[in-house]
Length: 237
Ligand code: TMP
Ligand code: ASP
Image 1 (cartoon, rainbow, N blue to C red):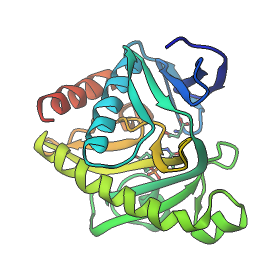
Image 2 (tube, rainbow, N blue to C red; image 1 turned 90 degrees about the horizontal axis):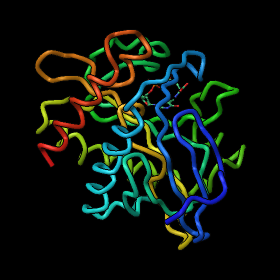
Image 3 (cartoon, rainbow, N blue to C red; image 1 turned 180 degrees about the horizontal axis):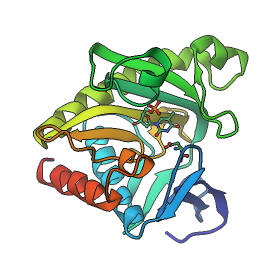
């Protein structure tokens, strides 16, 4: 499958059209950004690691009957995906408190929620991805509102599946973000990526942070963390 027009360039990926109008190529760049793009770096090797990690995870989801936009791997850093009508809504699932939920609501980092917490965010760099509720989705027409409960249900299914997978790999799945879209056949699917850029992952024994917080807060070499995630996923799936 050959690349045609560039459809969209984001902070970490480029999306290309192909000769098939329903299929797109998702190219993973070597760039890392944080705080809405304020902090930036080029990290050689990040793109291919993220492409590998996200394809392992999408395959796991597909095997369990969870619909995604993933079709296959094209190269080191390119995946073939279905074109989707993407909704600018991010569904976050949290098992353990970290990041914005600590700042917003005063939870102590490391607090384990009695049951996984779901939150919705509006995907907008300009507005700094604000927390929203279902009424905002309806008022702003961000997505068909009746799909939101289903998105949360799917996100919780993904959470129980991935929590088990990471647990076998000696890693705590602290939180993660999913995006959704409608595929050409009209079905609702998980789109975008699922990588250590969009998850928090802590080593169960040492507590070491293996995700993008390494880059956000200068906790250590980003690639080292991502490599550990990839190697342990590969050995445990
Ligand atoms: P937060 O603590 O900053 O709200 O993030 C929660 C999780 O969701 C964390 O793993 C990072 C991920 N996330 C993204 O990948 N992109 C986003 O725009 C947001 C808001 C969260
Ligand atoms: N994903 C956002 C960015 O790249 C926010 C973050 O990860 O801190 O700027």
